[in-house]
Length: 275
Picture 1: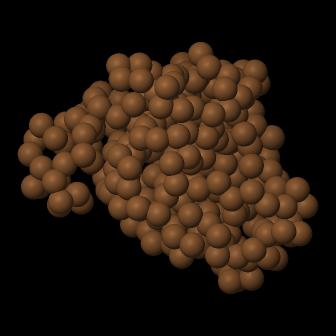
Picture 2: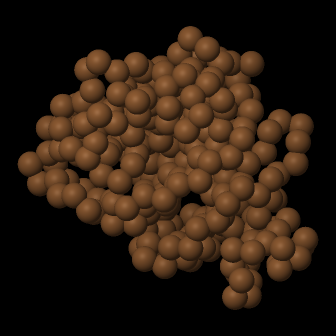
């Protein structure tokens, strides 16, 4: 198991897998937590527990978000070149199986590095994509959300999900990012794709979690206040459990011009994303 903060194409070789299991505090060695100097932390202290026989990391985010210039928590490694990243996660509410506060979600993000401190922050600099599960625009219903943000302008789509352990997967093939999911005992399912030719070779890739857009929304679009002061009267309503995350070189290959139309690619091409 590598403790390196950065993974390159020499690390992500064909037929190899770099897997990290989160079962104790030392599991976080080699990971970067994006705490911003001068801003409040976006997560409560990370805990470790066991769920359904799975040792796991437990993330309980404070009221925050990843939307436009609203900033949330991220635990990441820098990854260079094409990659396939898969995380086994379970998202619930704090006192119910499904969050009751809107946009309470956790999953995988790939983000263009944007280093700053509170006094050097500027709006319009966020570029990232993610696949998450929890609750989005239907509080109390389990959903997937996929989102792409270009220069702090966010576009999202939501899909029905189940409140159970799920493998989330993001596959990068240069500018093409493909999102998939798999429940235990079931087959892989394609969820969505985004085309992002602007994304640099090296990205921050890892785990995000955030909660309760309901109480952040009244301050929107005052990004500076939301980010720098936090939301004191909100409801923390997400518990994200993360068993493990694995990085691999993609088994899928680029294909054709109709990049976002799987109906045109053939079954064999689609299945290459699901190995």
